[in-house]
Length: 129
Image 1 (cartoon, rainbow, N blue to C red):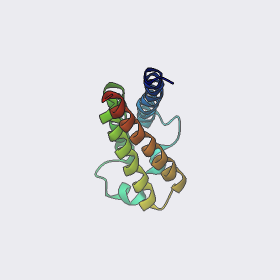
Image 2: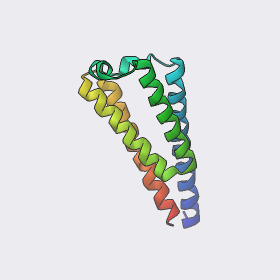
Image 3: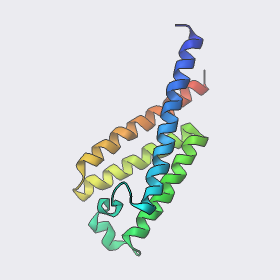
Image 4: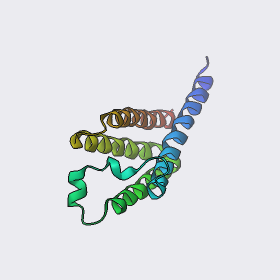
C-alpha cells in the first residue's frame, strides 16, 4: 500500500470513530430527557442522589446536556471532543464502580473511553501528516 492509500484508510477509520463517538453521546444525552433506552436514574448512585440539591431526574437531564455538547464537539473538533468524551466516560465508569453497582456498564464505559482516546490520537496523527 502507498502512503496515500494508508492515509485514505486512516481517514475512513477516523471518520467511523468520529461519527460513533459524536452521535452516540448525542443520542444518549437526548435520551436522558426521554428515558426510552433505559431508566437513567437507576444508574445514579443513591449516595449521590441523596446529597443533590435537586431531583435525580434534573441531574440526569443536566448530564444529558453535557453529553449532547460533548458529542457535538467531537463532530466539530474530533481530537479535543474525543478527549472530552474519553474523560467523561471514565468519570461515569468510576462513579459506577464507587457506587458498587453496574460493574458491567462500568467496564463497557472504560472500553469506550479507550476507543475515544484512540480517536483523539488517530485524529492528531492524521492532522500532523
